[in-house]
Image 1 (cartoon, rainbow, N blue to C red):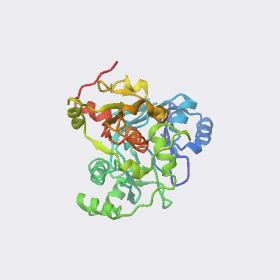
Image 2: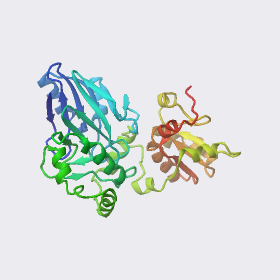
Image 3: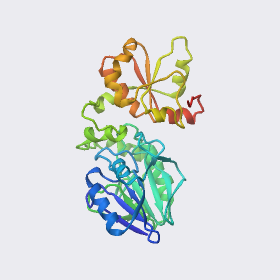
Image 4: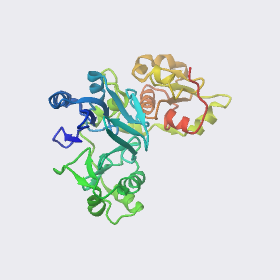
Length: 346
């Protein structure tokens, strides 16, 4: 097995290849280094099978979609990933074959809901959940310190001690560690129970990534267009979140809310289906088509997407345009389907 870290900076991109078949996997590519990745693949005589983002990044533009466009390979992410550009959604316990290598997916939420780790042989690629001598922040929307503690202690720390740890970030010049070393020495986790870890993470004032406003929502939405004015974090945090059963109850009443689905047409008619009676306006078209909703300026609107992320952005955009009663379907169509609530697929 060939493993190379290609960026040599704080943000890590890993190339993993089967030495026998020369098939390769690219993990967490950055947009600005795509030329480098293509050059390394050509130099090493490798054929790329797939690109994977371990989670939705908040500090750099993902290069996964561009690599997919340039090479024609699959883009793989966890099923709770919000971007519509994913070709294959995976979940805990599934495997991804690369030549004669097999990558096992570990769903390790906490940093983000869609965070996953990849176990390939005796190497684990942990994204931003487990870092060397640290852990990923949990203070963004969807982050959860308790979930992160469970992901690390119940999944990653159950791996053999010798398992080599490759994080998606490192800020101290480290390259690799091991599960045994992190279990014994990681200062955020050593001798701490779950509640102690939650309290510790709540006490840390993390600085915002310098480019979060420029990269987070483009990564979430697959929209990189200056004409779209994305809401800031404070506006996103103000969006009212409704659980699926609450929405189900509301749409059964005499005066139901308008259901606005902001996914792409292919998603609307895809495997997750859509809620009966919902109307479709893809997020990238919403600012120019908001006038179509003018009759609902002061009446209830519930916005829907795949996992509740793009729809939160849409709800904040509508609120900024003067709509006064806008809510978001928390967890989107992923949660709606997991709860067995009715959908249409045509």
